[in-house]
Image 1: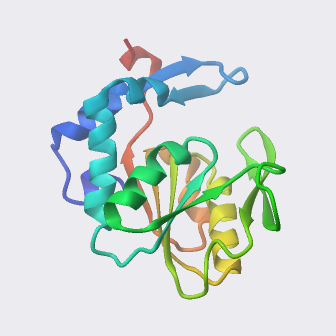
Image 2: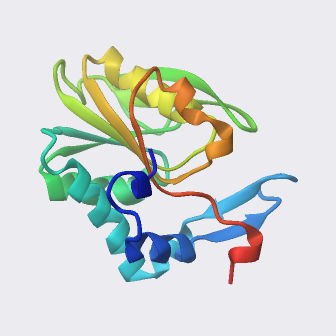
Length: 191
């Protein structure tokens, strides 16, 4: 569900967030319109608004785990976790975490990858959300959900800054709700 469908229609923060995202055509390969959040991070108010909207949504849901997907989920996840009183659990690419890990492979819109999480980072019964910058096919979020559920967590929702509605990523999330702040920008919309 997009934030505008959940009480934030007309909220000027969403327009500011959308305007702060740059589109890089044909990156990382021809045909991809890369939604670059690094420009969002340069705009401190848009960055703050992004975190604040997620915090307002999750503050009273009894969330004890905020899992962030490498790498851009690491940008938003820790701030959200601190603000709602939850721990942050990084979900990393292979061979980035020391110690014992569990793994889950998934398909990207342009390849195959894997996520890993430390064994013991999440405990049975903990309520979790997954944070990432963008949902396209839903493969990354599905892998994150599987990792957390393998550890016994209850995944309450996935939250993304940008959602590509034409990709229908939510179909791969096994019925888990998906909360998206803004849709993708077009090259014509960019500065």
